[in-house]
Length: 216
Image: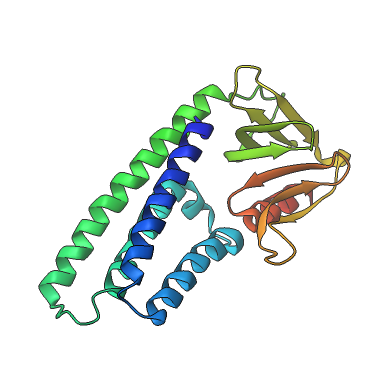
């Protein structure tokens, strides 16, 4: 599922990039800069945002509405010479809300389907605090699946049929925030030093805060 989704995302990005390149031939560098800043803002939000727990719970809809906001701003950036009245803006807002909700619902249903394929056997007196889709990488194994934070440990369960599992009790490891690269050091996941393992997950700074709450 992850591989298929990744391929689709790549194809969509290529298609959008081609269409954008053609369109940009008739526009100016200010729009190009605006689009770059818009894309970078989305990456920064996902990397650094510390959402309250209620917002994390509805993150599927948050992603959906955020995407629609970006598309609206992208659309407005190329309509600088057009007259935009209140009615048109209201229609755009209503459409964005509806589409954002539908995108969020799609993301939520997809996540629930992944949850069914990545169950975790809880220990005695153990309860889940957080879970989300993630990627696991320790230079030998690369798996897509789901990461769990419980009151006793940090776990990862893969999405494939082998059901690869990785878990650590809090007394067995220390961790830092994994970054994307040296040139653009944005938080992208959790790095576990003792196992040389990386768990790439959304809102990594938020995950760090919640893990520290449990450890302390």
